[in-house]
Structure formats: structure tokens, C-alpha cells
Length: 278
Ligand SMILES: NC(=O)c1ccc[n+]([C@@H]2O[C@H](COP(=O)([O-])OP(=O)(O)OC[C@H]3O[C@@H](n4cnc5c(N)ncnc54)[C@H](OP(=O)(O)O)[C@@H]3O)[C@@H](O)[C@H]2O)c1
Image 1 (cartoon, rainbow, N blue to C red):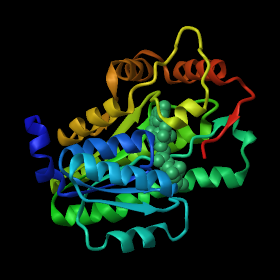
Image 2 (cartoon, rainbow, N blue to C red; image 1 turned 120 degrees about the horizontal axis):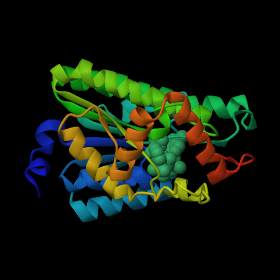
Image 3 (spheres, rainbow, N blue to C red; image 1 turned 60 degrees about the vertical axis):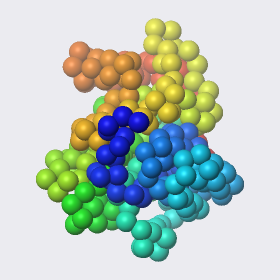
């Protein structure tokens, strides 16, 4: 273990909660955090996957674990979370879950768009408000809100999703500043293509010049935790995402960046694509 791993519990306590943790990046965060000796609470909808992962983490890393089967879009979500965690001191929260419809904005009805707001906007806001306040009062803690390079500017064919990724990015960055004097680290992880079941199921096509090679979720999680420990406000995982973020933010005008991403997305997914993860 590195010296950073050893002092992780000093910064973030003994319990972590990962929202959207049954597979993909959420699973990777849960495993990487458990490796640091922190007890794990997994939240997601699919009970079988949650239970399997919960018992594997207990066995592999000898930490305490708890699984909460919950739809993060449900109206009583916060009441359930409060009831399930009231006796535990949660010092680290990763909000990973997202709904990411791909396709033209009008391919999706309002009900679908509201669900995206529930999972991608209301969820991280509620978790940050509830757990962030407790952390501030305790004088320590850490929060990671997952975002995306798509949140750096409008991302055609992911219009609503990219708007919500801008929300989590800005929320985390602003709270990084507000909460750092209270010992609470808040960070956004602006991921690029990552090999999660959700990404794979969207079946992206090769797009010519730009062919994002999806990153290993474990590397994304590991790098994010390192940056959180160093109290960075944002993390772009891996070299190619850092490079792409540099191009999007500093080399292209905002208008050129939007067109650039629109051209890539139309090649990767086709204009008529209409995909939404479960
Ligand atoms: N994968 C990429 O290429 C990529 C790129 C850029 C950014 N990101 C960001 O990384 C994060 C995760 O990526 P991903 O979309 O590929 O997903 P993922 O890591 O494969 O997993 C999504 C997780 O969220 C859970 N989840 C989804 N909706 C939920 C709900 N309503 N209630 C409770 N749990 C829910 C899923 O479990 P259940 O289905 O069991 O509920 C699953 O465990 C997102 O915030 C996304 O914006 C990903």
C-alpha cells in the first residue's frame, strides 16, 4: 500500500456509500475504496448484482458491507437512505449513477427527460446536501460526483445528458471551494469513454479520426480517489481524456467544440439512434 492509501481513513472515515454501484464504474469505485480498508454501502436497483458484489467485497477485502436496493429516482429516496444509514458515519460518498439517453432531444418524451433529472441532478444534489452537511459538521469527508467530458459544453445527440453533466461538474467544483476550509474534499470526475456495461450496450461505431478507446473502470476509480485525497476540484481520468479536455477547453472555440462533438456523435451513433440505458 502507498502512504496515500494508509491515511485514507484519516481523511474519509470508515464508511463509504456508492450510489449506482451494481456494476461498471460504481463497482470499480466500491472495490478500490474497500481495498483501502473502508466499509462499503452499495446502492442500486438490481438486488442480485448488489448481493453478489456485496459478498465478494466482504470476502476479498475483509470490510463490512451493506447493500441497499433502491431506485434513486423514487420520491422517498432520501427517507430510505436516511433510515438505512442513520447509525453509520458515512465519510465518503460517490454518486455514480446516471441515465444517459443517446439520440435527438425530441426522440425522448418528457417523462423520460424528467427521470434523467431525477437520477442525474436531483440525486447528486440530495446526496451532497444530506451527507455534505454531516461531513461539514464533523470536519472531514469526501464526495465524488461523476460527470463527463460531455459536461464541458453542449454535446449534440446527448443534449439533456450533457446538460446534467454540466450540473454535477459545476456543483462539485463550487462546493470544493466552499467546503475545503471544513476539511471536506469535493471533486467531480469528468470521465470520457469508459468500458462499463452501459457504454458497451450503446454500441458506439468507429468515428474515423476520433475513436475513443474506452478506459478500464478500475483505472478511472483509482485515479479519481488519488485526486480526491489530494483535494483536487476535478479529475480527468487518463492521458487521452486530459488531452481531449485540453482541446475542448483551450484549443477550440466553444462553438467549434460543440460542432466537433456533434460530428463525432453522429458518426458514432447515427442521427436516428435512440438508446437509453435501463
Ligand atoms: N461509461 C462511460 O463511457 C462514461 C463516460 C463519461 C461519463 N460517465 C459517467 O460515469 C457514471 C457511470 O457510468 P455509466 O453510465 O457507464 O454507468 P455504470 O457505471 O455502468 O453503472 C450505472 C450504475 O448506476 C446504477 N443505476 C442506474 N440508474 C439507477 C437508479 N435509478 N437507481 C439506482 N441505481 C441506478 C446501475 O445499477 P442498477 O441498474 O442495478 O440500478 C449501475 O450500477 C455516470 O455518471 C456517467 O455520466 C460514463
